Amino acid sequence: MANSQKWFRNSNKVQGLRGEPYCSYIKNEHGEFPERAPRSMGPRCDSKRCERARFCHRLSDEDRQKMISNFWSTMDWDQRKIYVVSLADMVDVKRKMCYSKLRQCSVKYHLKKGDCKSAKICF
Image (cartoon, rainbow, N blue to C red; front, side, top):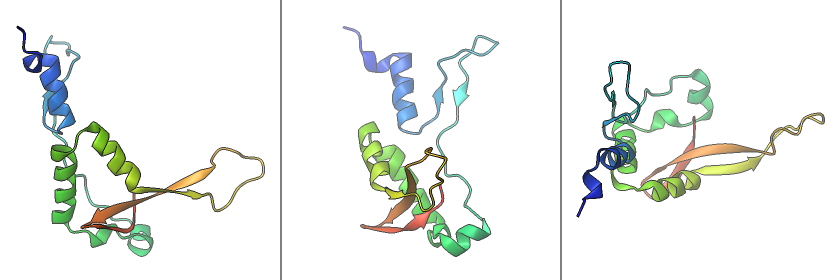
């Protein structure tokens, strides 16, 4: 009986969902499957507005790395969606233009440090 977990496509899918390096499904001009880089932590926000109004700079790099590794290594896709939704708050738009009905609400993002939500951050 065939083991579908060892198939190329299925193993790549699992590696991509875990944030590990995986091969692309689309071949390049040489007929090879190019390898995608693993998920990694991006640079820290360094804007002046962020320093005054948000609290991105209060999270240490170790805390950020723990959050990212926990997100990619221990959660499955459904848990990730629930986690991200729990960190976002929908609020009314502060100023509505009478001629525009483009946006009904704004989204404010937070991160959890320990068991409690920290203050808002950039996204």
